[in-house]
Image 1 (cartoon, helix red, strand yellow):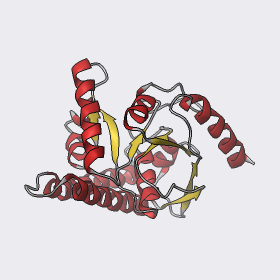
Image 2: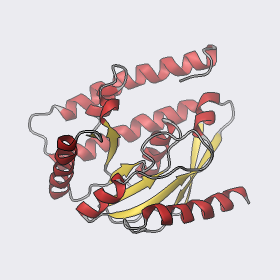
Image 3: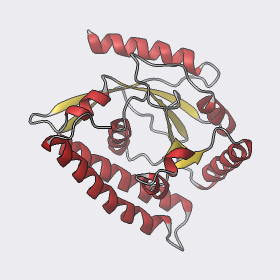
Length: 241
């Protein structure tokens, strides 16, 4: 939610709504295409999400600096900290640099939003209902089926489960570890430095501002939270030095 509705934020809101509506229609052409198969569909939707994200970052006058590198191989679950909606756009920009295809794991309630629900659904995000056992079973079956048909697939996930408003990071939910184990995925930790809530509130900027993203080495699904915390601590120290 925007703190104020001055001309700066009104302009930002209008820009993002108009652009979002444009891309919902772009996503729909692929999402409802009668002949497209899963692999080219995810490739096309990933490309269009990246295009959308780059357009927003350009409007906000934000640059992304990456410390570390993405693995060359696919079938990776990227475990990312989460403080703002801007996190998704920042990461889509990072994934574009290596032409990565993938899908975001998002809570079912986001798909039910009257404002941006269709944006999540049509752009190829995968919903999960954490409070419904039948829904969870269907979710895991859907993920497994997708990986069988899309060999260059990756998953993007916020292990904290939702945006964290406190300092640092908070405890992880079990979903990321379970998904990685069930589908034999490598896990790569990612830390977005700074507070994207404040950065987003203050944008757009007259002068280019930079958001720094740290990419770590592979961690185990069995010790994901412990290893992520070690990675985060080292990245934060490096960022503050």
